[in-house]
Length: 133
Image: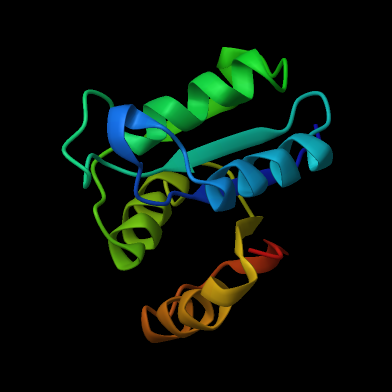
């Protein structure tokens, strides 16, 4: 079965585990791209020292706002930096039958993401999707 695999990179939460507009835009982009049977990985730990991790808040948003089934979402909730987002996501997807994936982040974040992917010498095909923020 053909499906798309999306990795949505987190962004530090505001007080009371509230998402920034940039993070909402990343998730909204993912919701727009999502089709039945696709898989989404949300990445982000608890860098803001809030009640919930970025991944938890992102997953909840995808389910409640995007009507995306829980079974379509993988949470990577340990990372506290972009490098860890990508390293931990890669560890997870390298155990799966994923041939290519799309990374969703903000436009201003993309050069950093590309550099990290290149420096880590990830051997999978990846695409970049971004939002304006």
